[in-house]
Amino acid sequence: MKLNYVKVEVLIAEEYISSLREELHEHGFLHHGNQDNVLSYTKCRHYSRPLEFAPLEMSLQPENVFLQTDCKAEFRCMIHQIEKVKKIIHDIHPSNHPVMYFIPIFD
Image (cartoon, rainbow, N blue to C red; front, side, top):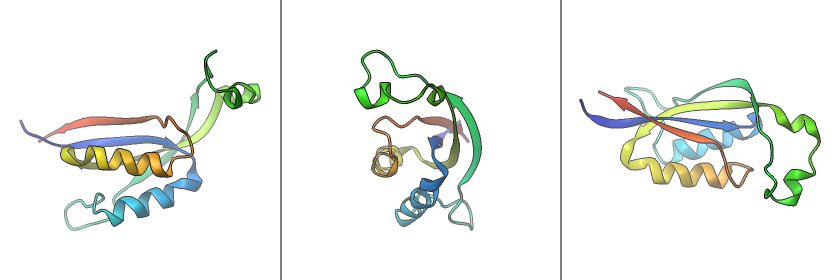
């Protein structure tokens, strides 16, 4: 088995998905076969709660921040592109600590 690709999952607000897709496309990361701009997303609900050492602006948010509705964007990239993809996500994502996963895809 070879490990050439990873599946990328990112929790992000729907309003940022177009920017994310455009930037990833600009760098050629959304190609699959004879297609480009290959990215999917679904709305999802997730829980999070600021810890006691979180920045003050996080701890002052109302309690309903614990249950949030965001989107999970999914796409694949080559394993050697991970660092560039991380940088793009960090540049576009409104949070300083975006939730993102890189899941191996075995050929």
